[in-house]
Image (cartoon, rainbow, N blue to C red):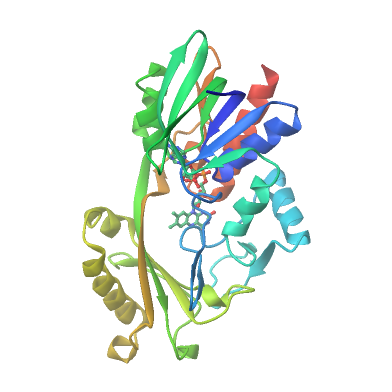
Length: 322
Ligand SMILES: Cc1cc2nc3c(=O)[nH]c(=O)nc-3n(C[C@H](O)[C@H](O)[C@H](O)COP(=O)(O)OP(=O)(O)OC[C@H]3O[C@@H](n4cnc5c(N)ncnc54)[C@H](O)[C@@H]3O)c2cc1C
């Protein structure tokens, strides 16, 4: 049994932000993360043709705390501004350098994170929580904590927490859209015939076509395609092979290149089951009556990474006030 004061489940932006704040205030915090790297949906996949930010494309900031974090990361050389042609907003678009996953890697430094551990059940024993987490090798690890925070997408937090405490029932009302993502590389480069950014319109299969390699510090000729929420939902369980052809066909249509778009030299697909918040909780975080069990994340507030940061901040302040 591993003992800690506060156990945070999920090392995405929300979990890392929360753990960082609590640790700075002297709390004994530990994180468990089911994947092998931190950052969650701020993620980057490598290939021999270049890298792909297959989750969040860029970050914008409206709040002073998030702006301060971005400025710090930028000063350290870990974030830079992306200016794609086709950009449709006056705000700066910030990207991790050399990939979006850098953000999580930097934030995780100095924190106690156990990777490759999937929190499966939580139970209450003698006034403390016992979390059972499964490892890829099939061996379970047990954690004992006075307080537990699920910093994971709402449907997953609901499944984990609602059986334990009815306070988490409202998570059922949070709606998150899936997103099928295609990662494509071309050789030779497509050049000016395709702008760096194309947004899909109503009825289009693709919500976004982004030239990943136009971001600062990237190489090759790489594109990330995000399928629209409705299409992703209706194809959620479809075979990736079938979707590959459909998404490439949509790129042909939406770039206007048709049959002139050459075949990619690299294709990879990724399914985000809980990608973008469609209906948030509309409160900054959620907790139970005795302030021992909590959940936070972007889904509390909005469909943007900054919302994950805001949610974690609000919860950190609350926990430290107890
Ligand atoms: C395709 C896509 C495009 C996006 N585009 C943008 C954009 O352009 N701009 C923007 O601002 N935002 C964008 N977002 C949203 C942004 O990525 C999120 O708002 C933000 O990253 C959410 O952070 P989080 O910490 O709340 O959740 P997550 O990043 O989902 O972190 C949750 C973490 O918990 C882990 N986890 C889950 N369950 C368990 C468990 N049982 N045990 C252990 N670990 C667990 C997960 O592996 C993950 O690492 C996009 C997201 C996607 C998927």
